[in-house]
Length: 514
Ligand SMILES: OC[C@H]1O[C@](O)(CO)[C@@H](O)[C@@H]1O
Image 1 (cartoon, rainbow, N blue to C red):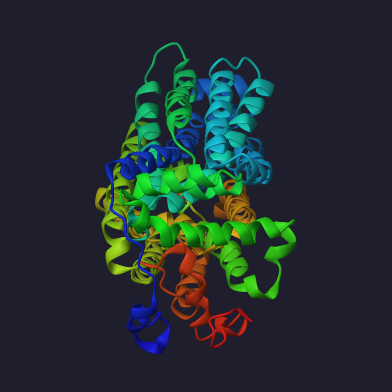
Image 2 (cartoon, protein in one colour):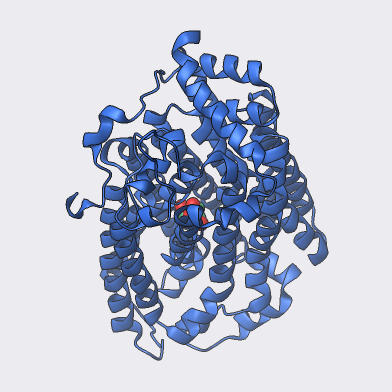
């Protein structure tokens, strides 16, 4: 790429290239771990549909139900604006945020695997409480537990996969995590579609209880997963770590030597660090700290969760009936899964920057078009009685193109890039920042979206488009390419970057860092 923002691959001669194959064992463990994303996705997809089911509203949020019944206003922008209801959706993300701090400690001290196990178990309990909820307290307690489960998984899975995967395939294997999130969202939309038709008004129980299935699966499979070599070294099991590394790379003792020694050195350095939180604010880690905050923030400020949480509400607003709105949500769900596959294929081939930049431009264009299209028909008053069919179809198509762009760029890369740029001595703490920032903005947008739509109207799409333009520029200037670079060699991308090099430690002629 022009402009010298890429790392010069001409220097490949001096870049380490650890031997290793994409063994079945590594594929299997990474895919099983990445399925941890299912529980998060299921939850994202289930809430919107459940909160638009009449029996659920009647039982837990009667005031919202009556308001909706009595609402004769034709202002489509402000129909569903209710704080308590959005609090139900978003409370989970606050719990996940708080949990990620505990999870950071567990991931460092007890290993990535223990963190995944705990995540699955707590999520399972939360889902059961929700399925049998008889009052709002049970509903909220269940949701808080789901949040804790999600926090533990988000903390551990991306790190687990990045540490297990051979560096040339790290991107694809890591994107499977986001793929699992999108499959979870899709499955949830599908389940809502059917449960909303169940007679007797208990459909929502099946929707919420369905979360027990992926949770059980994750809990059971995580108990068979091995720890990563890095985790074993953090706990002082050097021999086991070497044997594990050799096994997952499918190479001989001699061939694994160099990579093992580098991880060992990283682990020794990390043990010197008593407080990773103090460490991460040191000037030398400034690029990583900035990315740990901005990447998840940018991922959420694309506005993607407006579509994910509120697709049924959104489609209802633009004039689809109850059934049609869930149906359309299924369409966006399918696009989300399929487009993520593009990233599984392409991230190690075309690189992270290419996907970020292409995705950013596509997001921007279609967000502006959507804003214009909605503004044109709904105007500022939001009063509209009938919409032509072609109009609704164009809106759905544009939303799909927007979702596709997100699904091969910011969706997966928002997890992949942070998980591969942190040196071991700050890894757990930095991942905790990534999860917390992501959860915080997921919370904020879930909480504010309906109010924002009510006040900003079609301008809301332009608001998100503005941020997409900013983040695309940011990637162009400040994010170095990280594809095909071993994690232990990653410090070099910052040392060679036009902007970040002034923050990092440089190597002197003898190769020592100063
Ligand atoms: O696929 C869309 C989903 O992906 C995420 O950004 C997580 O990576 C969620 O916040 C969103 O709902």
